[in-house]
Image 1 (cartoon, one colour):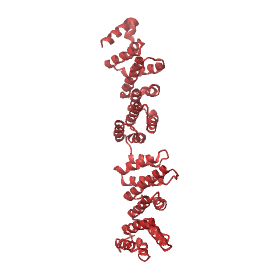
Image 2 (cartoon, one colour):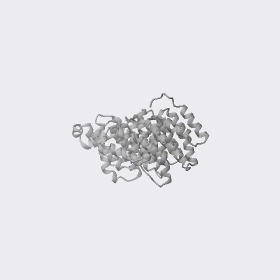
Image 3 (cartoon, rainbow, N blue to C red):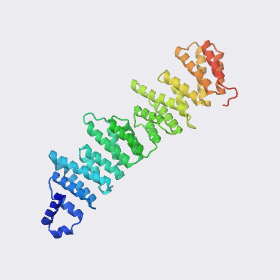
Image 4 (tube, one colour):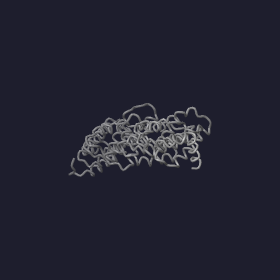
Length: 399
């Protein structure tokens, strides 16, 4: 305070008393600030002016930030650059807290001009606080780029910038910020950053299931990311219908591509298997007949026996006219193989899965295929399975 008073007296004598008393408080702040050339001295003046807490403080901070950005490229020396970065951090934080939107453009310039990650992080948070929605897409892009490209050499600075983007998107409070923050919570960052992302997710107003279903359906995400999104929905408290929609989307995505790459094929199969399990748990949305076609494909063309048996069990759990028709057709096809002597061990294992699956549907239209097994030349153990399945189907059940 004493130093500020001395500077005020100096300005008084330099500029003349009449000029000083004609000035507004903002003019006085600017006159004193501009009387210093070194950034270190300007920083000291900034601290003094802020401690005064006058009504023109926010316009002054906007002025100081603009002045800094105009001459930033000419600043040299570690002390001067450090002081300049401190001025930028202090002013952007103040302007963000005050929601001083007139300074939004310069705050965004701070993100692009300065290299100090703490200052850039503070500037992003300020933009979010003042709801400067013109810069929401750019903030999203910064976090998306960081999510996709893990830092190798400069991890600390990358994480600092990611933290700023995450908190900024929380402050924006726009649903479009949900997905990049979600992937940050699952990403390469340290636990501190991921924990903040999880906290921010809870504060961004969004239907999380809709956002994650968009990830599953979008071509802009990897199959690993789609599976992560599907797992997240499955573990969430989302409505049963949303989980069913997500599972159907996952199965469709799992069959959308074909590849000879071994790892990619395994990823696609993993997505399909999770989807198939969830369809068995949460059902099929009314009118979504395409799910049955995809389950049929998983049975006939699945990556491995696990996927094929999973499709059989899910069709059994659905217990619909269409699921019974498909299971019956599989069993009848096995009867044909038996008669033509082309049945192999894998086929017999599948028969042992299909028969109880049909019985578990408890649907009368499952009887025909099961009776066909009891009258065919199957082993006694297979016939016994069919007889037990038939006993599970009440004679008076509806279709």
